[in-house]
Image 1: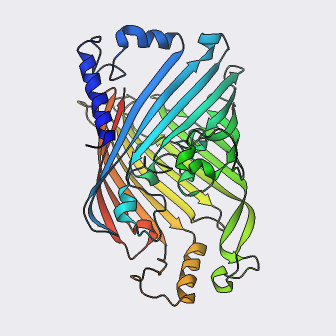
Image 2: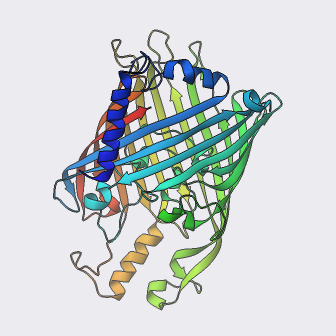
Image 3: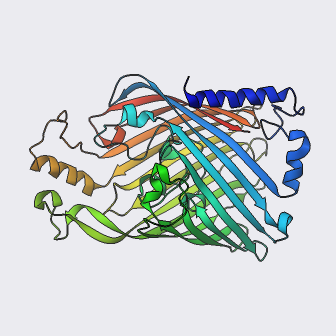
Length: 446
């Protein structure tokens, strides 16, 4: 048994042991937390402004067929989230202020890297285990102060933050990464989603209860991706800034109040960016042998729409929601020039299980034609024609992904999500066989 499994088992068994000696809410299906209300202490702390949080998510995946390596196997990744929020109005008398802390820890191995994608190209954003990546290590993800003014019209947040926690923020209800969370962060090398936090902040103006506008600025520091820099607080290694703007509308439609969310935003990064195809004379760099042309910054934009369209007997907590998401990238410097996703989520599909949900999603990741041309020219210059040759540069075009899953909300603190995923052209390489994957997500709130 590995040390990590041993520690996790001991922790879980310790919780079970405590259940016999703790209050009656331990492991109660109606409790918000697995460990219960701690004899009422947890509710008391919440009332006083102290909200402590500990959660765990595991994601497993097995390749049933296809992929670059047909050897069947399974991979397991997980993530701990530790932290909480302090209501500074209750604690210190500071009106509409709070302090947020989140520390994350990731570990495990990813099936996409190990079996599905050609190792010469790697993945392009559709890992079948979304909680893998950005370094399997401990990190400060959020350390932020938030202050609201004028009855929440003005909302300011600053500190250590993932950009995707406030911009292009869509949540994550799929195990496939191409359909999970902020789309921009999947392919952009300058936009970091959770669990990577960077120094920055945003100013949000709620023009009406349903319409807002916000702008933000964040450091761009590639060294924050290093596994040994999870708790790095200085800005050494910073190469520039990422500036973001977003407009949003969050309507509640109809008499039932069917929820919607619509966003449109864009960003510009000030760091130098290498051209994926041309040298500084405008010639294909593979032909000239000269260094890539260097651009003063890079940009991108995104749009998102999600709308509930039905209810169940007037209950807005149940019903069908449709979503679509698009992101475009700088064609001079990015691996992808665009990606898109569409899908549907049905909350409460059965009267007997009103808190369950059923979802299906599809995504396309389109490789930048300039990068595709660069790969093709590389092979031509080096007289490489055999895909099996280790020196051959696989030609990337587009990858398509699909996922269908069912969320079993077993208790208020435990969700189990079996899923099936299909990847066409993993890594965008036509020579790689389409892959069929079975997955399982487990979310627990301690």
